[in-house]
Length: 167
Image (cartoon, rainbow, N blue to C red; front, side, top):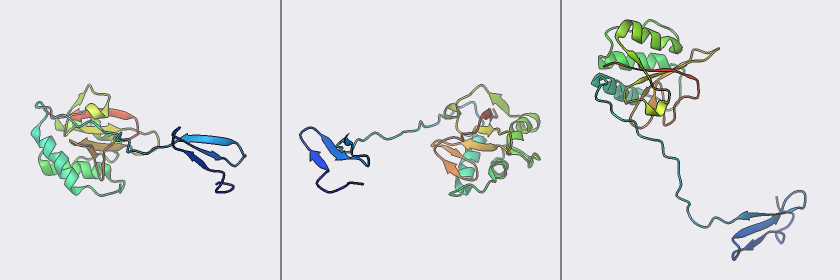
């Protein structure tokens, strides 16, 4: 990147590093000599006492079974976690993840919560995301993030259809 070693100049007093770029222009950048300490912190989810405790158990079961990376089986993993925790009594029949919310409301007593921010969903809530061409995505809110067939600290980037929970 440098034309020669003599071109680069570190001026400690001004806190700038000066060098010539490819076009020959002299450019400077600030010198970072200490750890900045600013890191992104994602908010922890709150436990809502009105939400069925079995949903929190479903979240922990999903966390235990989650893989490191997605296997494109999010709805299957969430179905199995809900069934294993006893939140639902039978295996859901819908194929696509984006259909999960309507089936959970219609057949299993869930209700759609008035939440539009995934970070504000209570622990154990089921978040359903849509997509025009794909099957969508579904995940369960945990204390530290989101889980389906894999774990993530951030929610899906797909458009949120709804947040569902059972009392």
